[in-house]
Length: 285
Ligand code: PAF
Image 1: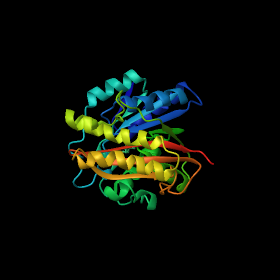
Image 2: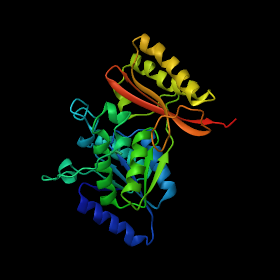
Image 3: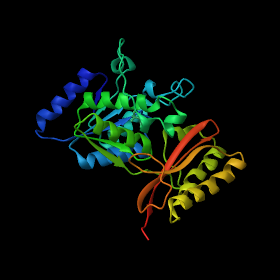
Image 4: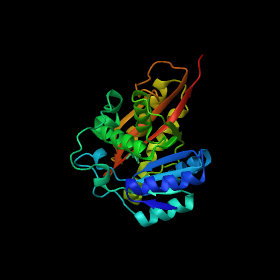
């Protein structure tokens, strides 16, 4: 595995690898590090789809609000590099903040309406920061495809929208959510949960499983709300939102709706904010 700490170093590694394999396809897995089995599943999907796998580790300051955990975000670099190598990554790109955001930088991506609802309403500017860094990383790495987890469903929808709106020549691949054996969706933030909070956090997945059993979007939403309300009343979580939405637009789906939708939930457990989602399939009558 090759390590690139700067853009010129990345370019060198990329042309070395390209020289040995004409026509090789590159898959890119952007991450903020603290790699867990969820990230490694993105790498193994990338490995299956392409010849060269590039993984970036960059904790992007632009996507954190002023009261969020940028400084405390875990940065276990040595551990991440060992995991990336074992997973078969070809190049790890670990740029500095100065490399990505040189002094004098002025222009950012505006994530539009799709980026200002749900997560964007709770975390103003978050998706502007995500899209700005993703656009820059896509330009720097120039992959054929980029792989993102479906756990961050709104992030994936915003990225797909940006790719359309900016005519980016890259395939966006959404990879399935990876869960712990008890159903908790894997997240770098799970490590902040105490044992009791981790147990409380299971209600997010439980609410989605309840939604999956229902026949209409309204019933699915009511079922999820019922499960979550108990945990809110018991003081175990602070609910931010639970919604049933269109996976492409993130707009609420409330009427009878044959086809698929997403149930989304976001809640604070202790001081840790968690999100989760599941696909819902509704039959026509
Ligand atoms: O999903 C993440 O880890 C980040 O939002 C991403 C896509 C790497 C951009 O910083």
